[in-house]
Length: 205
Image 1 (cartoon, rainbow, N blue to C red):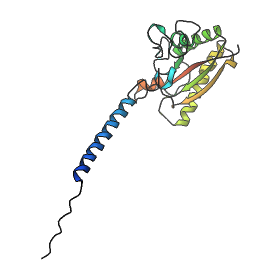
Image 2 (image 1 turned 120 degrees about the vertical axis):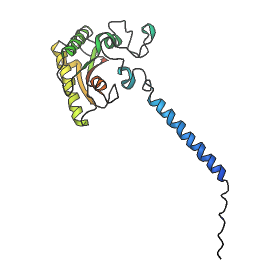
Image 3 (image 1 turned 90 degrees about the vertical axis):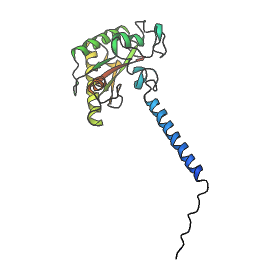
Image 4 (image 1 turned 180 degrees about the vertical axis):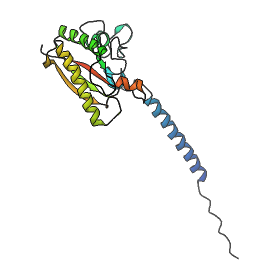
């Protein structure tokens, strides 16, 4: 008759179970903290993913996410009540135009905004601009870079047609790399199909 060898007791078995429970709780805590950071709209600084130019900082009469109560400048863009400041340009004039799906032709609303931009730029000749072209997340990276370039060029040409010196305007395309809204529905896509006018000081007139 064969005798079965009794299983050896695992020393510290209870301690291993406690350690596993602690590690599991720590992992869950890190996951919760990570999700909280992802849901924090200010994780990129004032204005969201585009910094000073993120959601809330664009468009005619935009929210101007970088400015506190009373128009206090917290972004270095000047007083939003000063018609010569970059903050005024962003919030009152409007620094972006939107495009239809897969389109690069400037819409009537876009022409109205760009006309206002041209008037402001012609009155403030010390500024140069970079016209950024953007696309939504649909399609390949290469296609959207090309589409963003066409959108930036369309906005650039409209400004030039309104009397802005071509030497003051250059273009760049980010394609789908810099969305201001990140979600998979048309409301977000529509905000990402845009051309954004970014001011820089030191242009020749």
